[in-house]
Length: 88
Image (cartoon, rainbow, N blue to C red; front, side):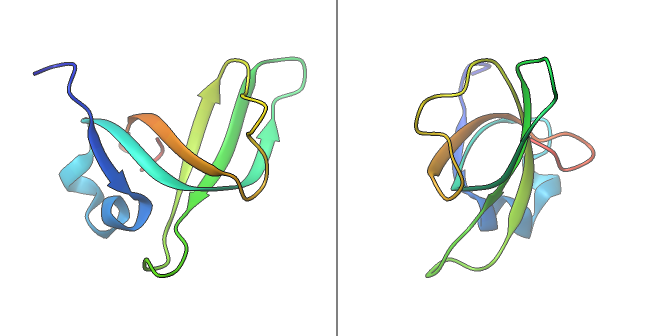
């Protein structure tokens, strides 16, 4: 189904990104390095895995109003498609 999204942790996705590229994903991780393009609702942050999961990160783009809970270290499930550049 087109509207189906795969749920994976950051380390699972980054262990074999080619497997997930172009698919609708929900990726679980923890937010770090949150940045905002000045004067816009465009954000970029890194999702990282934490123990006991293996170390891995994925860069994530987001456009819109951030939830109040979005801050450094917060637990996130980001939804999107992994691009050719391994960015969600």
